[in-house]
Amino acid sequence: MQRSECQLCGGEAVFLCKAALYPGAEREIARCGACGAAFYSPLPDDSELSNCYQTAYYGGFLDKYWKDYRKGLRLGAELKRLKPAGRYLDVGCALGTMLAGVRDASGWEVFGTEFSAETARTGFEINGVEITAAPALGAAGFKADSFDYIFANNVIEHLPDPRRFLEEAKALLKHGGCLRLTTPNGANDLSPNELLWKKKGAVLVTRHGGHIWFYSERSLRIIFGKAGFETVAFRGFHFLDALKSRGLWPGALRRFEERRRRPPRRADAPAASTSQTRSAIPPETSRAVDSALALWRRLFRLPGLTFGGDFDILLRANKT
Ligand SMILES: [Zn+2]
Image (tube, rainbow, N blue to C red; front, side, top):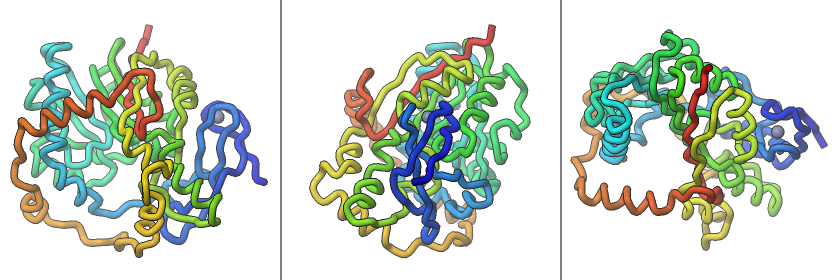
């Protein structure tokens, strides 16, 4: 049994199961006995990670264009109540659809970063938001102490060095500024792989390609503290998703197995042109239905409950 050191807490991690980082790339996953985080062991480097992503990976985001835009409007309205003017950064903003919503509702200055230059350019053309293409937050060229609010939606589970990311985000925030993170509940994200490995020795690509960390609440609180953040709120959401991943929903594991065994789409699929992308945005959906659904989802975003499929976290940078 392979043992390795946990980069988050320094504890000892032992073999948990095998999984595929991308089709054909079988790897071992270890779980730390001290903080509960699981991770690919050894952690893949950037060149190996690039095999997990398609060039034009944003295609799937267009289906939920209006949902994302309105999510931005709701957050923008919250920010405006917080402060009449400010600077907002969305890390890994894809096409910047949510960013456009934040801009329209808050009047704040908004910025985005994106690792894919192609996605950044298309996002600017479609949504008119400034998106910097950069491989890492620290390389995007922003000034220290210059942001009031940074949002990183499903980012930290992809990064080989999450502590470096937190430190970079903290450097960019003003004193008292907020970092909002969403990330999968790792136990949940990895659960189908773990169950199918234990039952049948099946080695399958994880639910979302490119996830290399499977965080526990404890492991996250440890790295937030080490990076000098105060945890203001820590919530679980997506409860139905949690039941499905844990095999507690009829047929969910079988469907996971079937879907993960299908041949992958080509990694080098040609990028769509801006006009093709624009025409793939569905017609505007009903705003009333969207608001009602958002309210419904909020009921399931409960403080103190971390069973949910994802974590929603608010941190504050105290810099004195
Ligand atoms: Zn650990």
